[in-house]
Length: 250
Image (cartoon, rainbow, N blue to C red; front, side, top):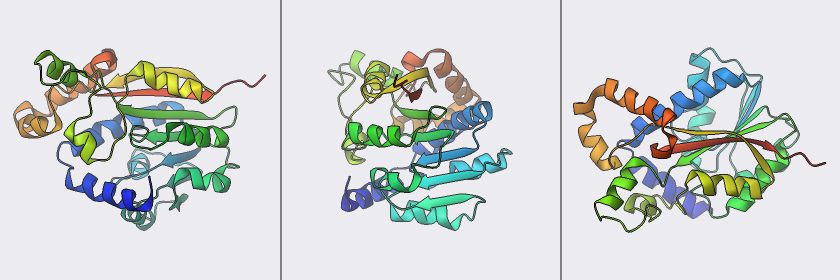
């Protein structure tokens, strides 16, 4: 994704926030749970958006030695720089161009959240991530799920021929592909990564636009239940995740 497309994506993302704001909240909630379990001291985050995960981690009691955000979008990187969070370093570059600056960090955790489906070259990004991983490093990666309940419902209704069809929202946000858990794991394994855990979170019954309209009716108790349901039924969850380590190079 070049500079022009990055600016276009930044504008489209902020203009189409809507239910995505709720999604960001649950995505962040899941990441905070993982941070609590993993307790990383050195974190590299690829992309940050408008609501900083690191800020929420600080509020949650986190105190890492170093948190690095690599973010190419001007507005998003400015928000990160202006946050004045402790031990935060912001690099305004595409991740593939920042490897030489961070490859000696020896990160405990690399976070690639809601990004892999948007990049032009998956092998290029995953190869760059692999280059900064040590034997102890863990990659957390999450993406939307092409086999989610709402896509399966749309197919059952005859609205789409296949769950992997690109939606209008996918196209508007310049997204390149949609993943199911199997092809997500295949891409990581092809990049020399070994899957250590996998799953999902939040069953979203309807599209973002429909969810935005009915969320006030559903209420947070129902949404929280749908979030937990996605963890026990990841095949229906609207977002899936994998965690992986660099494959042993014996």
